[in-house]
Length: 90
Image (cartoon, one colour):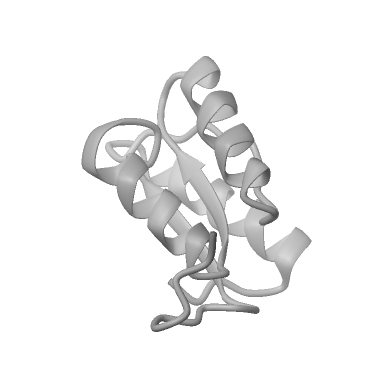
């Protein structure tokens, strides 16, 4: 169910650490507000689970693993998201 007081329709959000805890909760909240959300983290199984949850809310997502301590992995994350969504807003 979308939260009508906070409309992020048409926005694209990348949530580093978005596969558990506070990051996952933030990702779900952004999706509920209408954003397409790409949750990322180091573990593929958790990335897949978080992306499925976002998609179950009717939003688009991607499955990309990244490591916040590895700059090249973050640069690759950005390139992949922009290649599909053309932008990153959040």
